[in-house]
Amino acid sequence: MVETRRSSIIGPDGQPIMVPLLKGETAAPERYGARALIHYSEASGLTPARLGEIMRGANMGLAKPYLTLAIDMEERYLHYASQLQTRRLALDGVTISVSAPKGVNPKAVDFVESLIADPMFPDMVASLQDGVGKGYSVVEPIWEYEGGALRPVVYQHRDPRYFRYDEVGLRDLCLLDDSGLPGPRIEAPYFMKHEPYLRAGSPVRRGVARSAAWAFVMQTFALQDWAAFCEIYGIPFRIGKFHSSATNEDKATLLRAVRAIANDAAAIIPQGMEIDFQETNGNRGEAVFGNFISYLDGKVSLIILGQTMTAEVSKSGGSLAQAKVQENVRMDIVRFDARQNSATVNRDLIRPAVAMNFGPQDIYPTVQMELAENEDLAALGAFLGQAVPLGLKVSQSYVRKRASIPEPDEDEELLGAPAAQADASQEEAEKRQSAVGDRQSEKGAKKKDATGKKVAAEQLAALGTRCPSCGEIHGTRLAADDPTQAITALDDTDTLVDEALTDWREIRDPLLAGLLAAVGRAENYEEALANIEKAGIDSAPLQEAVARATAKSRGLGDVRD
Image (cartoon, rainbow, N blue to C red; front, side):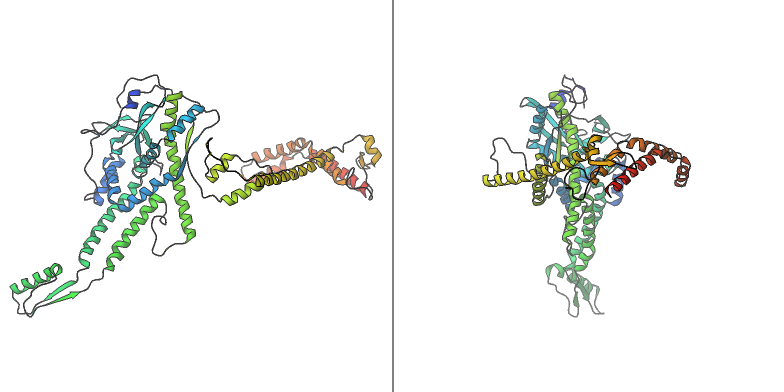
């Protein structure tokens, strides 16, 4: 990219944007030079030796032959092209939405929603998927002022051979210079660069075309041999027989007749000579060449889709359970592609577009691409129908997302339950809520009653006697007393537990201090046990609390008995 005048428009990093580069086409094709149209092919006459040279050159950054071969494979290797197209089109099933975190500018959210509503946006996402096969994909957005904002009006997918990675780390993608060397590094907002993270390593080595190329070269040789076999297997094998006195001229005549009968179905031979026809078995070609090509195609399907059952149906068929498992594998890949594409769109399009129109932001809206799950709506509705009346709080956005139901517009007609059914549902919900409130009130009353037993000593004295063990006064009960009134033994026990737990920190801290110190000095399990035995952990507060609670409980039992 040629350095040009910078403007007052600021990008997400706070640096001025070069506006002329936004409106022009930086990486447009040329008649001559590094970006001239390339008409040669690498697939013609490809041999394993030549393929090895191409791969070694790509490892060193000379990826143009490799990228040319990847393009040729999509045109000539039918199964490979079909599987790539299947993975590319799978993103048409995702739901594209805008996420607005708390604190984001509402105008920026509306602007981003207008970007994803552009009919060209899904095509741009599909163009980014070209990186799955080749390792990377580049889209050049052409920016114009439209609708009161600076926005892309065209998304131009650029030939990957117009770019080259830096020669040091093969990490930074650069525009190809006229000399064939890496030029300026491409960056947003002038380009969108998608590098799917299919595996670790240099991006140019991540594309699935690199693995499928070996299957392509072997499949090409197998098809050539199978075609030669098919050319002659339907014609019977001919054997000419001549007598011992035949001359060389007679032998030549018989040979011409044997050769000509394959095409003309008619021949003239001298008397005394014979032509025998031997049948051939054409199934042998399918058993050898067909099975080998099917094997290669299956491996290519594994590379691209992660499974084979949705790609082709085997002769032995398959089970429904196996199909569902492999379909889940494919859905995992779709979710992976959606996440990677949304990350590229947010980094190279959304953030620069928002920053150029509304200034750099602390929080940016984001584009999310989510795959709708096969949700059991009946089970979800039954669960919500039981849980929501009991107090479970569920947001509408969560339910709409699970059910794949979009938010209605303001002027749309809304569905609703009939009036009688709505009243009955409301009454049932109120009953359930009332029952929940009653249970909560009962629990609160019991808790209040248990804690309210700490009344004045003179009130307890009128109800009970002094405990001979601890010296405190506790309520008494006769067998004829109403168990729903006043104090019960269980209430007194709960009170003892509450009292014992009031100073739990004073009980716990001495125990943990000695234990942690003993374990911290140990280097193994046996040493830790030995340190604990020698530590002399202070358990006096615990013993005192247990003794006091035991004495009180014993006293309560003696009084009740």
